[in-house]
Length: 387
Image (tube, rainbow, N blue to C red; front, side, top):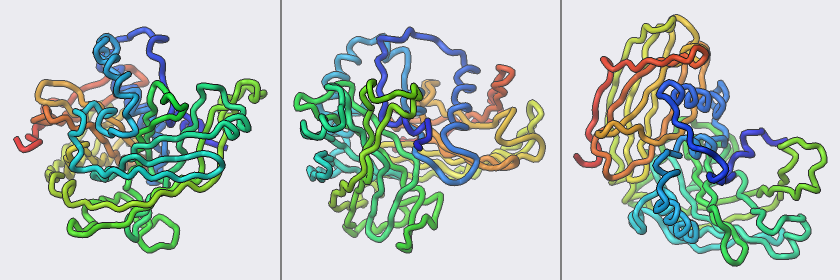
């Protein structure tokens, strides 16, 4: 049975059905900490549950109010499968030197999975996908006319390294293609690796760009062994939300190759080595920030909080907010886990070229009592993007 949060992967939202609500700073932090705690259980193993956080935290009032943005989104939606950067709100073709045109299709069970583009980023791989099904298969599944078939869990092999059972996110276009197919942007974290070929994860916290030769081309396979679809309401009798989704098992594997020289050259690692003592709201310990990694696509931050008093995971939460040089919070997704005494978090932020400085602000937040405090005296700045 699927985890209820996995069902959020690939879901879409009609924003016209919702009113705009302005959240306070403390409410935003409470929401973020709740999402983090749901995204990943209290263990090291990541699960593919990030899409909801990516979607929710990326939405801003400006997006909701600006008709030009939504008009542009309709145009973009017709090209998502062909242009990875468009859905990431980047100029068309701006990532062309980092991505590869694949245009390969795998067919099984009457369903075609086409990989249009692939891009290797720091700690993740991005796939521009198009999924379509013949009329016989759609009829057999009793799919509604507008129902989509969504990608399931992805396994990627780069050279002799296999990546699976990691966090992933799926962005689905708001409008299907004229031929009835759907486009997706699929991002798989390359943070857990099977490096010895035994089919088991043997390395966690993996940085793939640190382990590949920039002068070498690597053979790549991208494999889906299941796809998901939303059942016709008439097929769902229990009323249980989880029962409204079905699974199609098969083998959809596409082969290509990748060279990481360009993304490696343009990914910067900034050592921080910050040790910040925390003594606030009944929680004491040390917040450790080792480094921040900045690629043309993403900004990644890993931090650890070790508690000497209080609970590191529940009650008062300790974390880090990142703002740009204009004081704007960067859109983020995250995953984490740990124990009562140690909390580890991996945050990812979208990198826009207009970001020239990052401001790191530690905070403590108690969502039970609706309170939050920025530790501005411990904040620090970092210039990025060649500035």
